[in-house]
Image 1: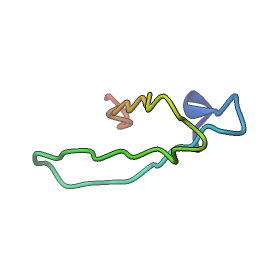
Image 2: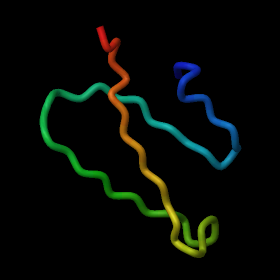
Image 3: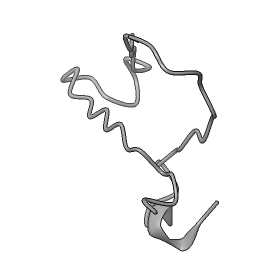
Image 4: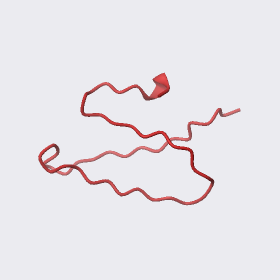
Amino acid sequence: MPDLFSLGDPGDSALLVTLPAGSYSVVAAANASDAPDGVELVEVFDAGSGG
């Protein structure tokens, strides 16, 4: 995982995948005991070279 995506907390997670161009959606569900208030954050980045 590139340093740009370093994780600062043991509860953090990341997924780095290569997808073909297109439209996508995200479905996120927290474990109720870990996040009883139901707050989640999903961020999507283009991790390409940017060249």
